[in-house]
Length: 355
Image 1 (cartoon, rainbow, N blue to C red):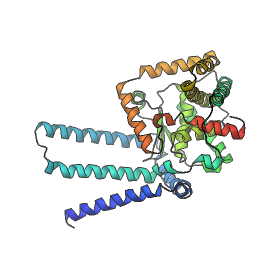
Image 2: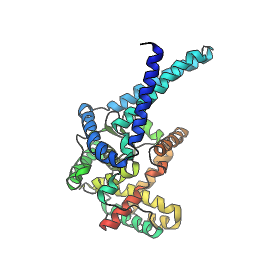
Image 3: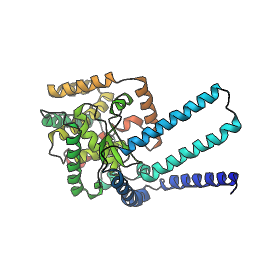
Image 4: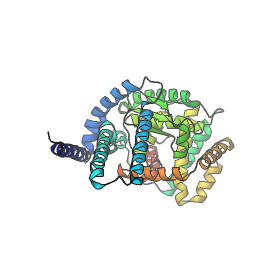
């Protein structure tokens, strides 16, 4: 086949595939019933069966190799530019190849996991009514979370990755007995190979859709790790939006009997809720902070010092890029999408009368 016809055919195939993906996401009922409940569990089971048994993260190695390739390609472009060897006739096929690679990555990402961004989600599954909270409701929620945080603050707040992962696995086994739609297997949570770098980039964990693995940054303060584990496992269960992953992580964690897991969860949720309250009533938020045990306030102070230590222009840039990514994937609040777990918590509290 002549090269021109092959290129034309490949572009047609790729763009048709993109169109099919986009059209499918316009039907959340189909996404929920067919993709999220049937296709994705099958795909993710194969992924984690292939990668889960390995003691290291295949997904991190994929990202490392991709980063090396990008640096090599960029270096080559810079070298050619300095030697004045760049011309449109020479660059056009390369640019075309890069665009096709980007489209292929987009398609693979969506087929393996990304379509979950468009599912109906757990609000429908639990019969929750999501609506904005009043200032009084938000303040009351913060106080409830303070009680839980103080109650579960253990003597040892740095349980480490292994204990956190094990506690999260038990928690998900228990919550799946209660809500069968949260079940997923096999599990695969691993420490990130880029923990120190992750501190500068500003992430505590992430899900790799290309390998099905969840990664936890083990270099963050130890009391954060248990909830990070539950959050990333929620992504593995097919809940892509960050607010939903936080909420599903909460549903799982509250079934745990591990004090470090419960403390990590309620402390994280308090920080989200009080942060939202601070936007409308900074005085009430400050008063809530004083209701925390001194040991809890010390943990928060250590966390703030950690954030300041690793604050950098690189982290700010990554935050902006990630916020744009979230907005492109049905989360218009960007980075504040994490905080929107407060809406889910209020809906759950209104229905169940407890947290």
